[in-house]
Image (cartoon, rainbow, N blue to C red):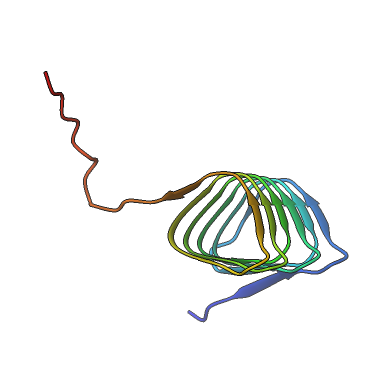
Amino acid sequence: MAASFSVLGADVAVKGDLSASADLHIDGSVEGDITCAALVQGEKSVVTGAIRAQSARLSGTVHGSIEAGELVILKTARIHGDVTYDALTIEQGAQVDGRFAHRVHTGEEPALTLVS
C-alpha cells in the first residue's frame, strides 16, 4: 500500500479532532486534537488542541500539548503548552511557553524503590 499525504489548505478551518494514519500537512486552523503519523505545520497555521505524532515539524502556532517521537520546532513556531519528545530540534528564534519532557522507552515501567 502506498503512503498517503493529506493537506489542509490555508483556507480550511476545522473544528473537531483529526486522525490520520499517514502524513498530514496543515496550513489552515484546527480546533481539536490531532493524531497522525507525521505532521507538517505551515507558518500561518494555528492549532488549538493536543498533537500526537510519530514525527512533527512545526512552524505555526500551537495552543496545546505536543507528544512526538521526532520533533522539529522551526524559528517561526509559537508553542503554548507542554512538549514530550524522543528527539528534539529547535531553531533559534522559536518560542515555547511550556515544559519539555523526554520520553523514556525502556520496555518496562520504571520500578519504584522505597528507601527507609
